[in-house]
Image (cartoon, rainbow, N blue to C red; front, side, top):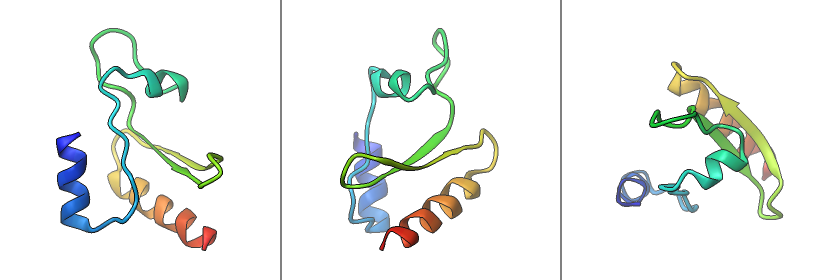
Length: 77
């Protein structure tokens, strides 16, 4: 949670970020790996009605996550 707060403070996001230390949300969204490996890298844009607007998955290209998430957010406005 500290890393998410620091990221939010640095970037002034203005929306909540999720910390999932028990990986329960990762399991529910289908991105949990077996064993001790970290979850698959995924970004979900979720509307205020709790509907998943966009799911982004890329293990190697972080700009894909940011670009597609921002595009989805802009379309929501």
